Length: 301
Ligand code: ATP
Ligand code: MG
Image (cartoon, rainbow, N blue to C red; front, side, top):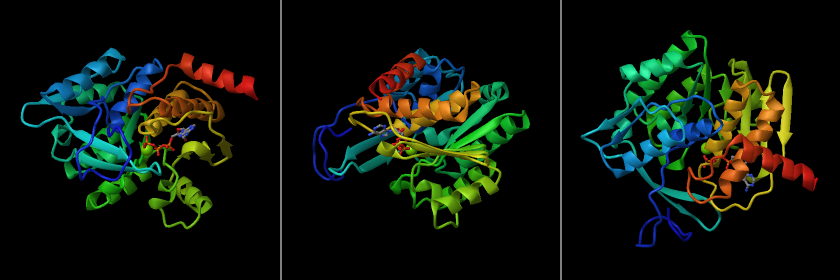
């Protein structure tokens, strides 16, 4: 992560890191922090970045048995620099890194057969190999009676990968919970308004749509309920990873039987805590921390 804001990576400047990261890893780490049994299917290189990620996830309670270690590829990495307006520029070393080698090993199938839910990050769908693995995995979980969630997590740097859009449209057909950020709600539809997009997506069979709205909070839509919740107060230090923590918290709450409104409240608290800490995976929270944020806000109101 660049220490100071600016545009792109065209001159030398101070960077801070490495941080354990990657949208799927942040998501699953947040799930584990909430005490939910969970695992990640991925691949890292035989290098310090890979070891750091695996050890961090293991320590937080994630099943890492389906994370392969490649001898031939380095761990995926990303460089991020905030622009003065809060937008971000990235340099990615992902497609040709170890994560691009992710396969459904026997360990992965064991994990899938134990799972009642499977989450897909759209930003992972960068090659036919991964798209095939993700589709196979989600079919397996669905066949076993499980549910699917999908966060498109579209980055402008990835939009020129042609197979990604088709894969994302397919994920939309399959998922039970759809977790777009603001404009992503409309990106995969024909709609020109949010209301039309919601109708179109619910019409596909998606049961719940949760829209992340950054510092404006979040919304929830199902066939019979619409909710808009304001954000919790937070000092925005580093918003990277907030959406992943938010999504992980919402999905975990729903799986644990919380109603949509309480799940959305917990997710908002999770996002608020995530933005207030520097480092993409450093802002994950326990239920105790989320309860404290919610109680404090009630106290203020
Ligand atoms: P990323 O993909 O980088 O993780 P995102 O675009 O998917 O981010 P955001 O909408 O930025 O996700 O943030 C997710 C949630 O975190 C928001 O819906 C909100 O609940 C919370 N959040 C984000 N920014 C703030 C903020 N400045 N103050 C309070 N809460 C915030
Ligand atoms: Mg996101």
